[in-house]
Every structure is written in structure tokens, then in C-alpha cells.
Amino acid sequence: MTGSPAPLVGVVLVSHSAAVARAVAELSANLTGGASEVPVAPAGGGPDGGLGTSSDLIAAAARSVDRGAGVAVLADLGSAVLTVKALLADDELPAGSRLVDAPFLEGAVAAVVSASAGADIDAVAAAAGEAYDYRKG
Amino acid sequence: MNATPPDGSPIDAAFVRRWLDTAATVVEREAAALTELDSPIGDADHGTNMRRGFVAARTAVEQEPPDTPGAVLVAVGRQLISTVGGASGPLYGTLLRRAGKQLGDEPAVSAAQFRDALRAGVDGVAQLGGAAPGDKTMLDALFPAVDAMSKALDGGSGTADALAAAAAAADEGAVATTPLRARKGRASYLGERSIGHQDPGATSAALLVTAFADTAREAGA
Picture 1 (cartoon, each protein chain N blue to C red):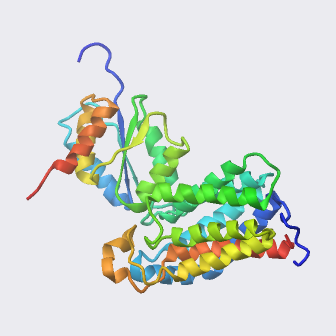
Picture 2 (picture 1 turned 180 degrees about the horizontal axis):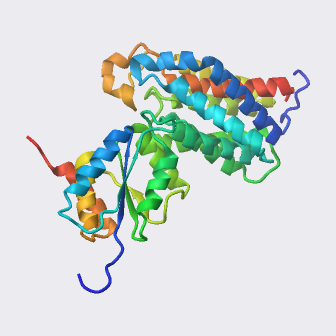
Picture 3 (picture 1 turned 120 degrees about the horizontal axis):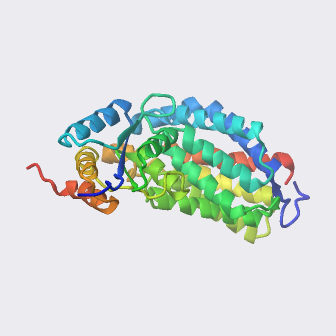
């Protein structure tokens, strides 16, 4: 790629557990092969700091990685998925944000690696979703 | 209550604020029981989550009381989404916000308009969660509640009687979740073992609908 670099797609990782979100973000970022910028942010845990989902953390994380190219949001289970959907339904996430249907860890790695390489939001979402096809046995 | 006019008294912002107050009190009182129901088949946080959400919603509405029934519902929904922390947050939040938006800026609405708004909200819950009746979720209390309210209004009942019918149906629906096998949420991972427990979400839904009925009865609506 030449010329001024296009803005990167952001990735938000929403888990019931702050530790899981943080660790998966760290693992994904470490697998990008030394990309200069890795726009990934964890949004883990509930409003009280325990296990759960915090819409405020999700919105803040999405804003922090929004470079204008869209934000791919991955969520682990239940309330994490539903909260992201509810936020999207009311336009409370940055323009171009979307919930990506993908397995959490494998999808996060695919999303972060492709986003760091400059893929657009459709390609990032597709890469994350393709992680469902990765069989282990 | 015998003097209830056929179309009932209008539902205004004060009515919905009184409902919030009643609902918050009931959720507080029943929090331990809800969490206990959530222990065998869920993650034992439903009562705690609901209490946190309703305390936040009551505080927010007291600090800045919206002046239409729709705006109160939207404000409560917003608070639930941001403070509950479990699946009931986005689900109840969607229900109330969708219902509130449907009411628009009207300063007061009829029981029939309110019923239509609740139906829109319940449809929003079904859409968001992807659940159907019989999946052992809050919808098993909410769908019967809206249907019963509709039937009562069509039969000429006033606001209070229609909401009382909704509350009775919601209660019945919640109790009827006991023999069901869960098909949504964490309880669904338990398969057959989810049978024999009343669904916590259907139970809290019945409490919230009953709070509407109590509010209307106390107002003589």
C-alpha cells in the first residue's frame, strides 16, 4: 500500500470477564506480526466490575478504536451479544460499527490480524466469521 | 373501581413514574427470591442485577423526571441497558425503550395505546433474543400478559381491570415455565435439567406487569 494509509477498522472484544477480554485482546495483538498500529480494545465485565456486561465500557471501547473505517464488535455470550445488539439498534456505537458473528477467541485473532493489515470492515467481518470453519478434529 | 370508565383513565408520565417506584420496591423486595430461582438454572445474579438496574432507573427519573409517559419508559430502558449487567438489561431495556418510542410525545395515552406500545416492546424482546413462546423465557409471561390485556380491553374493561388481567396472565405464564425445557440463555446448556424450575426472567416479568396493575388500581384508573 502506498500513499497516506487508510484508517484501520477498530475491533472491540466484549466478554463477561474483564480478564478474558483483556487476555484475548493481548493475544490477538501479539499475533499481528508487529503491525505499527493494532486498534483493538477490550470491554470486559459488568457495571459493578464483576462478571457481566457493561454498555458504557462497550461504547467507550468502540469510541477508542474508531478511526472512521468502522468498528467490528465481537461478543462472547448471552448478555454481551444482546447488549451490543441493543446499542446498535439505538445508534449508540460509532457509525459503521457492527456485531460480527464469530467465535470469540478465534474470531478475535482473525479480526485483529486482518484489521491491522488494513482490511476493510467487510473483510474483517468475513475473516472473523470464517473462523467458524476452522476445525480442530 | 366499579366507576371505571369503559376506556379507562389516561396513562400519563406521573402514572409511569409511580409504576417505576412500585416496580423498584417490588424488585428490591423480591431480589433474593429472583436470585434463588436463578441459582439452579442460571448464574445466580438475576435479583442483584434487577435491583441494581431499578435503583439506577428510579434515581435517574427522580433527578430528571421526563414529562411524557413515553419518555419515562425510554429513560428507564436506557438505565436498565447500562446498569443491569445481565441479559435482562438489554431485554427489558429494549422492551421499555421500544414501548416508549411507540408512545411518542403524547402527554397522556389510552389503555389501548399503552397496550399497543407494550406489544411493540414485547415484539422487540422476541426479535432481540430470538426466543419464541415456550422457550422458558420472560416472553412466556409477556406474550400472555399483552394478549390478556387486549382481550380485556376488547371486552370493555377499563385500564385497571385490563392491567389486572395482564398481571394474572403473566403470573400464570411464569408458573407455567416450570415444566418447560430452556431453549435460550445459560439455562439451555442444562438441557433436561432445566425442567422443574420456574424461569427467573418470566418471574421478574410477571412482577413488573403486576406493578402496572397495582399502580392502576391505586390510581383508581
